[in-house]
Amino acid sequence: MEIMNSTQAQNKNREQTKQGVHDQTSSEVGSVWGNAPASNLERIHKFQKRAARIILDAAPDAPSKILIVAVLVVCFVYCNGQDTKCPLEDPKERSIDGGTDEQTKDIMTKIDAALKEDTEVQNSVNEISAEREEPIENKHMTLDTCPRKLGFITTVIVNLQTCYVVYPRRQRVTYAICGGSDCYGSKLYRSRCVRNGWTKLRFWVWCPRYGFRLIYRWYPQCCSCYRWRSCLTTAKK
Image (cartoon, rainbow, N blue to C red; front, side, top):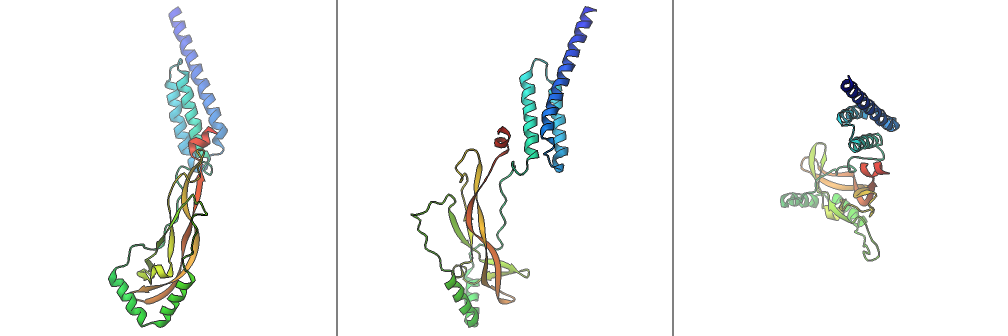
């Protein structure tokens, strides 16, 4: 009887320990549960149930394991409940509307021939080229954390047909190419250079079916440093 009573007492103490840990974990999770968006509640609930099974299977003399699991549950729920402060992915950039491959000699020859027969378009191309002369930058006086390179748009889609930009470099149909990470220079944040400064450009294109067309498109001309906090950094705060 003494052996049975001792075994029953141990089982009872163990059940009480499990229940106490479960209640404590649920209380900590509940403190941030209200911040979670509705789309993440089901995933959070499944994760909590999985963590609870690990906790219940732990031995009574292993408090460190239980504490680690409880902390992981709280961190996971917190990160999922703070979408605006804890993004899981890098910032998404808007795609460039157009192709950038070099034009073939055959296409360039056809554009030159078509321009010789249309002086009005040729004069307009010259005017646009004069308006967009490349500015002279004093690189010795400035320090840019996001160095910028300029690429040229060579093809676009107009009415479901591929059209070719007339003299892309002369019309300066450009878009910014940004590179580099950790531009903010702080270990507390993640950072990356992204395109911005979207500008509406007017330029001429030549389409094999339609001939010359004056169109407008938006392209980024600048680069800026975008910073954000990772989930781990936010959870530790």
